Image 1 (cartoon, rainbow, N blue to C red):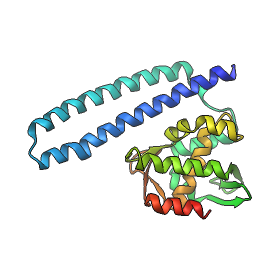
Image 2 (tube, one colour; image 1 turned 180 degrees about the vertical axis):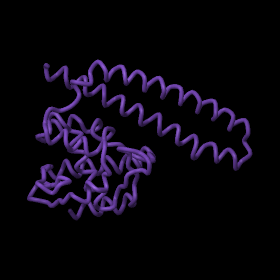
Image 3 (cartoon, rainbow, N blue to C red; image 1 turned 90 degrees about the horizontal axis):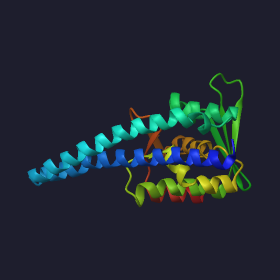
Length: 221
């Protein structure tokens, strides 16, 4: 398939990720912040209105899931990379405990690159990811920005990769798999106790350290 068309198909898939992320975040804000605040202030009418909005959000999320499923049935075969190592890493993210994956991962700076290596579960070999330092920094700063500027409760690999898709494709060797590169950085952030997997969620990560701590850590890599 023409690479331009394939990229557009992948970009649309990433847009679904962003929209699902935003709707989930809105639902959580209503449930965890807005309704409790209204309850404390005895704002019964506001609680009722919030519940109405919550119902509409959930309904929209269900419709979006159906629409995305339909999209994936038509275009899903064009979305995934054919690179064996990329597929293995994305499979790890989908099916295994990322803490276990992070524990099998090492990293170090080599001149202007960050070298990340993950040992396979059977210990037979490892696969590397080589990331330019400035891209590594950009990914970490974008993650922090989601929590600080946009007040997100969590981030997803797909959200960050879609935000940095063009930059990663233009400035690294990950032309077909920007998500793989972002996932590699997330493994390091989990290993360094900066992020952790949100309990009972796959591919959803919450912040463990302050933004100030992370930016200072980033300066010293």
